[in-house]
Image (cartoon, rainbow, N blue to C red; front, side):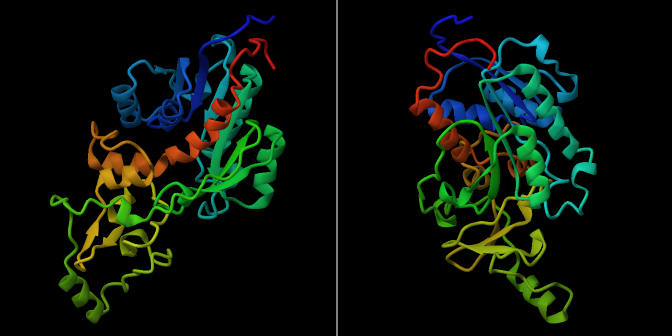
Length: 307
């Protein structure tokens, strides 16, 4: 039964992390009555509640029942990707973390949201096709490099209509690095040179092409950064400044790479900040997708019936 115009929506965010989806909704100006978040990492929850104390935390996705929730208008999530990625050692759907994708499917079927969005990494076509079959839509590939200083290819499955590619903002590392930052780790160039010469150190890869492990990878200021890694490895990636110094990115600079507001994550340790930023979404990609809801006024005067 239609209930007429609904001013605000209900959102259910699975694998919510530090609530990048909530940042994106606020950035676009989509108002919500309730934002339900499913997350189990205490550090990510702390960041979310620090910035959005009204967030309703539901705990593990496996414990949530659609029947316990009000009508959900927008379901979003980025299920753990370790088993899907090319670096996932071929575990794929046998990986218990990747099986959590089916919890997204379950809650989509139980909640029957009007719109949904699922994000994940690039993967083998056969696994991509399974997700597409389960969700009933094919993914859109968007590289975060269009809206940030970071190369980050991701797949987005959504029934939000008519989504195009974001406009290229032409951002580079020089646009996110704080040149006045003095409290940063500077790599000892002489030590690196010594290790090169004694062959005790794998040659530092300043091309940023990803041929070296994260702690041996570096990027120039006029280039894009590679995909921010998770598990704290973001702190090991180096940038070459104009004076030739090789430095480590600060947490704020990593926030900027993910288009997250400065100091959004500053209520937890730097180690945790680096980790959750690597695990998070590029906010401006998500806000771009959500803008198609806003611009089309899709949430105006819609029925509260299940669709």
